[in-house]
Image (cartoon, rainbow, N blue to C red; front, side):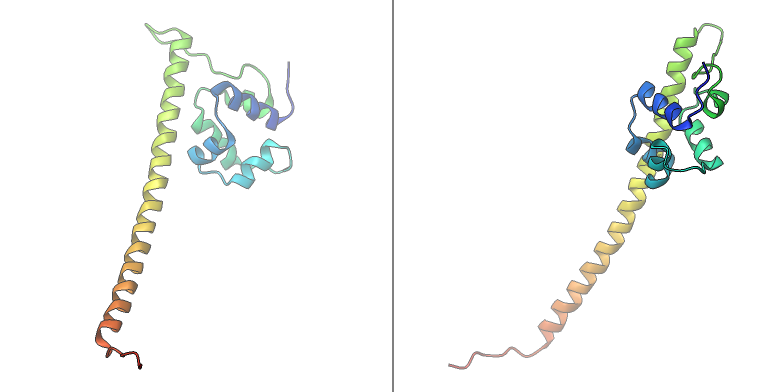
Length: 142
């Protein structure tokens, strides 16, 4: 059976791998509006970078199936000593690890930005306290 709707195929991938749109956005770096518009069929233009990001995030997904709807969703692998199911499980774990590493990098960058901002705020506070310490104290008139 051929499925002509890319957004439907992407939804099948999310369901199969038990991931949410937010998880995909974090894992691939796709903009939320781009990805969500694609999911809801609100965009007619789907960029190659979006397709590549999805295929990188889900390396066991067959590119031909994703693009055309023909064939099977998951690639068939055969390695000595492993059956297809075991290999697919390993591949999906590798994708999950890559996704978590990317998410960790994003969080680290945000933390560094916040640390820089906190340093600026501390300096401003120190400057304010220093100015107050140098000014003469006023006594309340009775």
